[in-house]
Length: 250
Image (cartoon, rainbow, N blue to C red; front, side):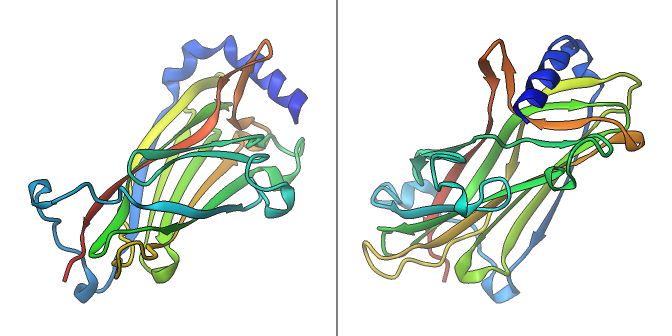
């Protein structure tokens, strides 16, 4: 896979001028709570006597999925995590490469996912938190009629039926191989349970990032992953998440 990445990146570097030929289409689907659970608008920021979430902390973090398997060495080998639920977070995925080109590569590499599980504690009584903006990036190389789709799903374990899922697809409608840096942001709103005591548990937040590649014409190349040029990483596969807090809705 390392040799493949270097070959693809070398080809891609000579075709960056073709990047604008890629077309991006986005659809979003949300599984909403029942009417009695639907959140209303948060109060104005001026009503907040202090900065919400400032005492929150990550009690534990784990990853799962074929893009960062639990038995693969844990956090640090497949993903690096920094940040918090006030200033935001960044996750950098290592060796996260999805590729399809006919029978040249195993089918297992066509679709990859990595799911992050955050156990959040130290919340302020009467507050709850939700992801706000999820951004992700990397590098894509597509032959004509090839495509790569990105899926982001967020939910809290305490109410897994209340989820947010977004899908973004990049495709190449042209007649030559094209490449581009991927940088996309989607809004995601799923509220945590209400914190019932100062310093109490907030909940377990889950975010799944999945990438699926489809090679055009049966033999076309579809690649998403990092970009490395002359031994230097130019583009990393990563996600960034911002959060928002509000008083619990009654």
